[in-house]
Amino acid sequence: MIQVRPSNERGHANIGWLDSQFSFSFADYYDPKHMGFRDLRVINEDHIAPGQGFGTHPHRDMEILTWILGGELEHRDSMGSGAVIRPGELQHMTAGTGITHSEFNPSKTQPVHLLQIWILPEKRGLKPGYEQKEFPAAELAGKFRLLAAHDGRDGALRIHQDSELYVARLKRGGRASHELKSGRRAWVQVARGAVTVNGKALEVGDGAAIGGEEHLDFTATADSEVLLFDLA
Image (cartoon, rainbow, N blue to C red; front, side):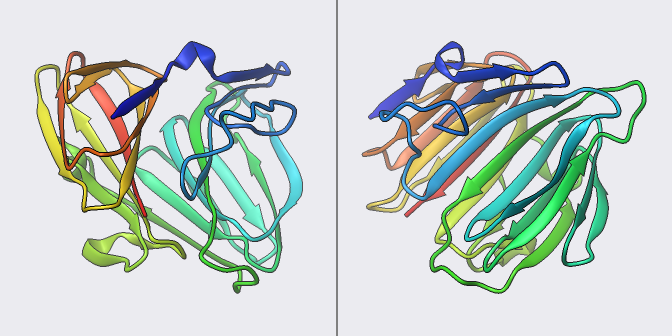
């Protein structure tokens, strides 16, 4: 079963410097039918204006992933971590017992476009942590590349939940596939372009909750970038 979450039905907030769309309930957007999917709690698509950003604010007991689609994002936190995140780089924070951080667009001319993802951790009170890794474009081209997983295999970042994040960049007409083990579910988020999943059409910004399907076959109907979450 594939249940599509159309882009135009997501929550939306625009405060000038920040334009956000919410796949699941977040901040002032609340929809009891869309509170997350399995351990996936948040997928926010953010556009941040040049020279703007989020001031220092707290998080706790959450696995936070940030994937940049365009521009750059500067990060600072209470653990002493500081970095600029660029397209092709995945940032992972374990908020655990509590952290504070800020996120800022350092460019004076270019907006930054990103997906921020929250995954519920396997337990509360974890030690906070930070890591960031670049995944070369060649590793994402034409297939699903594992970026984050509980066991950190194949060079993926290690997260504290039995959830896996894959990304594929497909040329129009390109195909990729993924196998779901028994009892697992998937969430697909189309970051760019358009694809079909087992014949179901998804446009840019669309998401889809998938269950009861062992084999997922993707065909790009435009040049596309797709995130796939394999969830316990």
